[in-house]
Length: 119
Image (cartoon, rainbow, N blue to C red; front, top):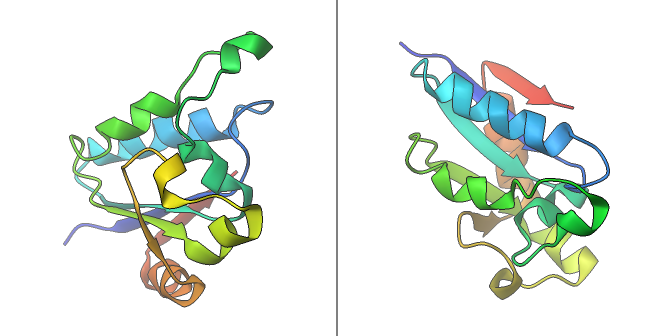
């Protein structure tokens, strides 16, 4: 039986490298047939904003790579609806790669995981 891994994106995408590093970890772990879940909470919801321009900060745009999660078999991709509401972000402003859900559902997914990774 394969182990499950929840990767929690909880920081804004640029300024720090944690978003890019977590994305790399998710894709690498998927190569080992792990059951990966990508969870976007708190400021991590900004990871999925469409039309970002990190080149202004002289950083590479890693956001389009989230579109590859499905290709790597990372099927569970959840966004905390409460965190979107708190930041005034609508689903239409995001890359279409994850579904919104309640904080309770995200907590349940985390509690059922064998491993949890967050930077």
